[in-house]
Amino acid sequence: MRYTHHLPFLLACLAALLLLPLVLQATGSSYLISTATRLVVFAIAAVSLDLLIGYTGLVSFGHAAFLGVGAYTVGILSFHAYEDTTLIGLPGTLSGLVAIPLALALSALAALVVGALSLRTRGVYFIMITLSFGQMLFFLFVSLEQYGGDDGMMMFEGRNTLPLLDLNDRVSFYYFCLAWFVLFFWFCTWLVRSKFGRTLAAIKQNQDRLSSIGINAYWAKLQVFVIAGVGAGLAGALSANHTEFVSPALTHWTRSGDLMIVVILGGMGTLVGPVLGTFLFLLLEEFLPLILRGLGLGLLSEHWRFVFGPILILVVLYAKTGLYGLIFPRRD
Amino acid sequence: MLEIRNLCKSFGALKAADDVSLTVERGTIHALIGPNGAGKTTLIALLSGYLQPSSGTITFDGQDLLAIPAHLRPHAGLVRSFQVTSVFPEMTVRENVCLVLQSVAGQACSLVRLADADRAEREEAEAALARVGLIDQADALTGNLAHGQKRQVEIAMALAARPKLLLLDEPTAGMGVEESRRIMGLLEDLRDSVTMLLVEHDMDVVFGLADRVSVLVYGKIIASDTPERIRENADVQEAYLGDHELHGEAD
Image 1 (cartoon, rainbow over the protein chains, first blue to last red):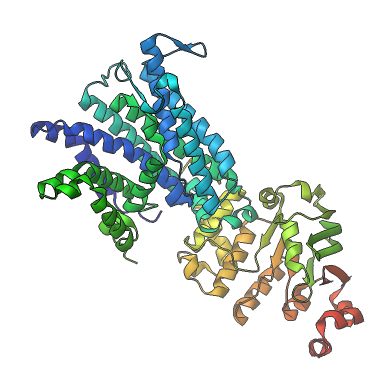
Image 2: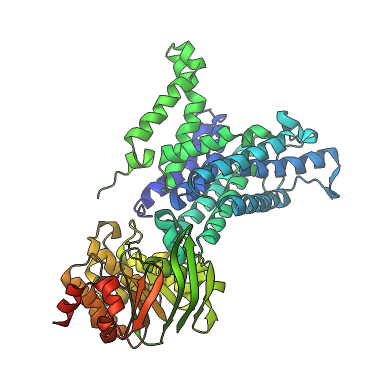
């Protein structure tokens, strides 16, 4: 909440993200636009988790579940549009104007149910119960034989359709995702500085005190949990469109773990940090094996996580507020 | 204002509140005294909703208090301060008070505007801080304050909630003489606008402020009277005050 002096940095990042496709095209590496899209999409999920972990002190270990709800909503609608069949009497659709809002609504509903139950607990119990709900949804998706079971399913009709914008064009799709990211990021920045954000900070600092000043902490936590769930659902819906593929792997607990790692790696409670964390994490995941192979370390290249793990540990140990803290050291 | 009837609360075999009946008249300062472990803080917790009683009734301002959830009791006008300082350490002093004000205004979950942009709220918070003598610390992080100053933040937060009945759990505990005197003066000034139930160890504070005094021993109210008559009550002397303290007071 006190980190508000970096508007120039944010604008520079925005400019870089806006120019990125042009640069990549000019340098003949436009295949990297897809990687950039992936970064932007998962940054949305990381930022949404930061609302919970960083700003409210709610360590949710099942956040990837809502990625799954968003992605499967888009995937299932696309499946029925392709098969020309119906689900509980309703036809499928490829229209982004239907699929994306519905994905957001269903992830909100899922977060409402999961939150209503799990927010009655605290601390380690909350971590475990969110993990359990995450795994419950994972196995639910695995059990959906019609939609590919644990193999997942392809979206044979391609991405969602929108009036005026062709999402199948990778540059358009990148800007589409970037627009959602900027919108969501701005919304979160507003939220954490609003009166609601102050209430969330109070929950994190001294939850037991809230009822004595007339604030229902449970209700406030439920609201932020739903908002974060919608953020993850949005990332899921965009991710399904991006890869034209949905599978239960998206909701596996290790995905939830990855999201927690990027939030901690980037710097909790900073919003910017988790974005940086996502970028570093996904870039390392993609390029660390290549770099290691380039260095002639073939064995490490196959077991790149062997190098990746210590890097994470070093960052967490030596940069208390993560990457963010490295870039913006606190002056007080 | 507040009427407690036959209130009981047990923790296993321990009776922390044993058939407690107590009436706090509107516009008075009512002190609750008693030795350590007598159940004073339990009683405050029952009133503020942190604990549920085993049996008994509490009527507050004409309403059945036990039917009101804890987080709505401050909105009904019943506000407490804490014996063990309980503030929001990573917020500034002003933000601590603003948090109370946004709750009073029903804006705890409001996204309408940025928290810092509400000038009226800010001014009201500063007025509350000025009353407790902490205005020069408005921008300090609450966690960095001295103990006595945190106690003053507590009082400022309680006042900001515009209470009808203020439950003060040892308001001057841990304060220096000067701060303690300031808070006593402040409570004296508030006498006409706010009813108070004051739990206190400091006999100077009790006998200096209270209109009535109730004595709680082992979960039972053993006496409830004016300060003068409490001082002369033989049961109270035996159970709690001890002869030398009383004579010291009387001199």
